[in-house]
Amino acid sequence: MRFTRLLRVQNVGLLSLAALLTGLVTPAPAFAWSGVHGDNTRSLAGSYLAGRFARSSHDTGRAANFYRNALRQDPDSGVLLERTFLMEASEGNRERAIELAKEVVKRQPRHRMARLLLGLDAFKARSYKRSAEHFKAAGSGPIGELTSVITRAWVEHASGNNIKALSSLTLRRQADWARFYLRYHRALIADLANRSSDAKRAYESVFQQDSKTLRTALAYARSSAHAGDYRRAKSIVRTHFRQSSGEPHPLATDLMERLTRGDAIQRLVETPEQGMAELFYGLGEALTGEGGVSIGVLYLQMALYLQPNHPFALAALASAYESMKRYEKAIDTYGRIQKGSPLQLAIDIRKAFNLNELERVEEAKTLLDAVAAANPKSIKPFDALGNIMRARKRYEEAIGYYSSAIELIGKPEKKDWVYFYSRGTSYERTKKWKPAEADLKKALELDPNQPLTLNYLGYSWIDQNINLRNGLKLIEKAVSLKPDDGYIVDSLGWAHYRLGSYPKSVKYLERAVELRPEDPVLNDHLGDAYWQVGRITEARFQWDQALSLAPEADLIGAIRKKLAEGLPVKKQALAGAAVAEPERTAPQSTRSSNQVPLPQRRNAN
Image (cartoon, rainbow, N blue to C red):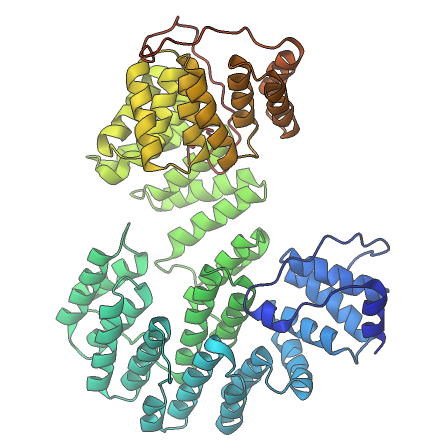
């Protein structure tokens, strides 16, 4: 074939479909694609290389266009056919993907993703026998086998064969994660088949296996309420609240409120199509969360083919786009979730963070200001605004937003340490040390074991040559809690430097640079420490390295001066004198503040 000959000539290696579907694809190198002008380049090789580059950058939209153009020029290429299909399916271009899937299975009869899409298409058309044949052919590999078993069970249920559907939900060798999915879908199918005892046993089994999982808790509680057992439903939600970490999910909170009012409650899944969508959503979200973004997105798009308004699948797909840095697509996908749902607040905040990533800061601010006005009792929009403003070094605005959040708290609890910490770091950036110190102390009072607060307060004291004994203790505690955090280890090394204990300083600063070799400030600190112990050549190397890492403007001049003139050699502190107070100098900050999303090199995140 023409395309295959071109590949041989250009020595372009082909990636196996097995690698693609298991998330083990190595990103393609950034080829120099001269002569490629736009998505409809006339060159076959150029279109392929451009498509491969776009796919490695997670831009599946442009990749689909490039591969589509290449396939038009060489329609006999099985490789181009397969890749074009995968990109079209990933983008949710279902009509084109289905037509391509038909061609793919002619050449690769057991192609998993093509068979799954064709099975779903037949299922939607209620052609159940054909659907089951496609799903059976898709049963290769652990994920494929599990998907094949559960999809065929839903086909049997849709055909009216409930006993066969339930009896088929088994695998010869079942890992715990596979057993979880099998039991969960057994519960859903038994529930729809009005086999209440079977459904209850299966729901109870998956709930005992993992009561933290929101989706299964909602399904079990809603099933109980639908059957009239509101007491049990509320007990399920309460158990989920107790077992889950962090703030309760808004959908769980909303369900509890509806149960308390005695509202009529529907089951989570009311049709076979919704049940099938639940499978592809669940596996898709799990795969994207475990790093298999490519296959996870395919599964999520299949869930949305069956149920276009599935809020969890849409949210999971938007989150996947965020991980790919496709922020516009993430915003558009969040926008497809039904307005006015309990998820609305969280959706709008995610949109604002994506706008911020796109440098549309004022749009993000306008959106969050509106969200705050619409939710006057919620801390979340103020916290989001504070975080964005702080990341943008608009510290005065950040202080105002964090203050609004703190006013809503009432009596602070342990979990509220973060608001005082965030406002305190913003005060420190504006050189308002007294309120900064008060907030950082309050954050530490609320949670004495937060490495971020321990490090920031301890470093600030030492950086200002004040309260050195306590500052060193705080940083040592922070390092004991997070020994692999480069910024915190750097703080300990810099503390020893300021105290004149230069060999110890070198030890910790070398470790910090190992952990964060890309940070100019850490490299600069190590250079200073090397100089003080007489390792002059290594000091100059570290300063040169710091300059190569694009430090902020105020650091560039200081490093260049050190390269030209060196440093005054200071007398090393006497043994046992590490807690002595050196001569006090004017407060200063030697750390850069361009860390995103939160700016402090004291690891303020």
